[in-house]
Image (cartoon, rainbow, N blue to C red; front, side, top):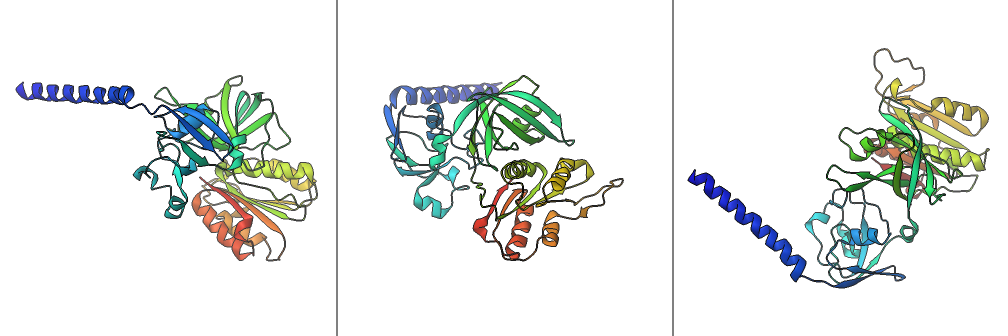
Length: 363
């Protein structure tokens, strides 16, 4: 009993000290009002002591962040020009040495304790928060759901094909996290946002989205992303995706043929088995309508009973088989798992594409 009593007393002391430390920081450490200067053009006055990420979000400056400020995604990079304190070990996994020399930091790890001057990509200052309503949901494969949202406020969204949004999803602790999903709708559908979401067991964002019903309200921020489609009609477009990598490909292809029905474009899409095939019928109809459009699906892991007379094997093999080596203006967009991206990159470079003409998202 004496042993248990000692443990109880020790635990109580530790608990009391923890509370006292929190109270001491709250009442005794007063950083006052701090100025956050962004790109030498926007100034925020914030109460010191919070993280830079939370200070920006409270002032409707939305930068990418998918982990709720836990330093596990590495999306919230900003360049700190002045202030911000020392670089932290929690940032080392995501910020390389070259970036550190330039002042790159994770906004979720920087505490606002003094005036700070930062630099962010200019487009971040145009990112908005949207409210929307679920218009429809449907299963397109056993684990991927298509969701369509109608915008409420603002009523329209301007984005480039291939960009993404960040859905605000409730987490189990009663707070919120943001999760990134590529936009699948075309740029001309300015009051609609469509997503393709694969369910991830235990995933906060995908579980939330897969349980939405028609009429439910959602909040998201965006658009984000570096994909930038070459508008030159003589530039051939190559889209390569797998799984949920369909979404940005779909946005790019639909946007292209709304503007220029004669443009040349390839879609290569990798699936595991026949159950994972979706939208193929749509693309085959487009292939008949637009002579410059070509679609190739490949199955890499066929199961007994799968019926398929198309390409077999990993999708980079199909890219190598169908693309010619002719030197001409080309641009490629890739979205899928890292091994797929690496294999396709090698093929495209062998076909003569320059690295700056290849955009990709890994997931």
